[in-house]
Length: 326
Image 1 (spheres, rainbow, N blue to C red):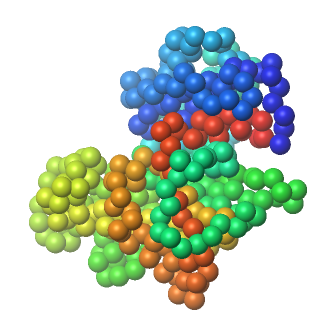
Image 2: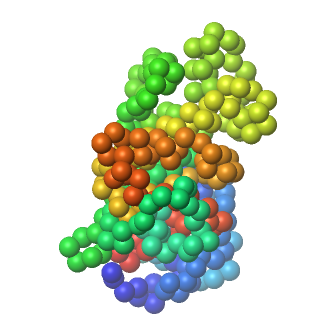
């Protein structure tokens, strides 16, 4: 790990998605985020405009270094957000804001970097089985505006290395005929039925509309909040089924990730949707579907799963660590 240069503080951190852009500053090495502000992304024409608004209201010295986790793959200098309209050059934003260094990483890479810093109060265990191997790989996924996927691997020196990828776009798999039918509707509608098509905010609506089509009934005009509200109230049987399918699919995808990484260090669930559904995950099919992998059921039963529920976005801490380690 690189030792932070105290002259580089304060530093700006960001956690940017299609719904919200969160910014904070880190005023000293190892310090917790302060001056945390959340802006609705839709209120700003560009990410530079959102950054300018944040910098303008800071009460500390102007940061000269910044790291931002963003809900998008980072390949080269140009960024075109998948689930939002912002499109920009990283270097152009750096010059416009006057940063000496500006680092963009995938938002779930940032969240993965934060995992070693999470305290017990930031986590809630899902199920009771499994013991984390401190030397094992760690898996991370989380549904929100999209489906983020990442993880941490140990290198030969024992350091944790974050993964940057787009695992949310793997193909969605079913476990029964009802799920077969839902995925067929999603595939007809979108061309490819990815995990993200079901496991994100818009996916709640897409699965609801698929169920209505399969059952031959008209779909109500619901947004994601409307689907979850009806499910929580138990006022619409198909909305209840949407949430049940959501957790079943999430468990299957999480189990696939655990197998792919050999995630004996555990699997963490982040994102904004699951915490808003209260304890539903505890009584859902999530954990059963996580371990339901035939001959590898016992292997997966030894892997613990946790829900991240920190009030301040842990990805902000991960973005700060990225300035030291990437």
